[in-house]
Image (cartoon, rainbow, N blue to C red; front, side, top):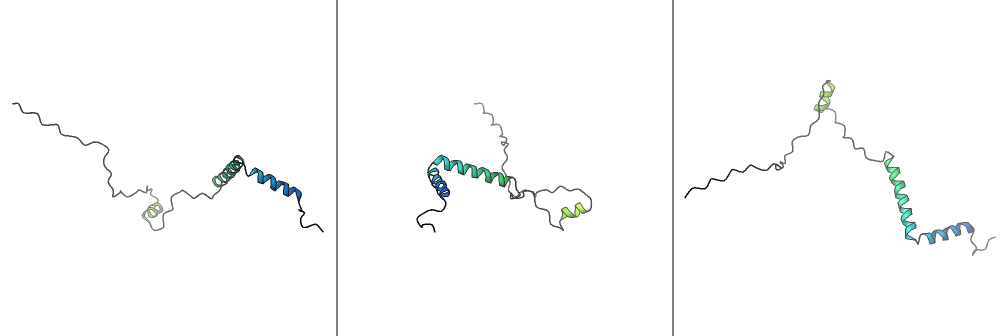
Length: 102
């Protein structure tokens, strides 16, 4: 029967003590965070966890689907915006009236 004060796995104890002293160093912590971040980045970029960026399919019964079913081609267009942006071209200025002779 082992004594209560004695540890069961001295190798694990030494490892944990080594980790405790390593975690006191900021460079080691920064390296661990960087390695974890790169691993997460690679996992997320190479899996299907990313949101699908394709436009949603049009619902049935729309004009687009009716035209497509008829065999024609139609390019979906955006409605004209109700907000009118100011023109980037400067407005023309009328020339100044000539001075009257005295």
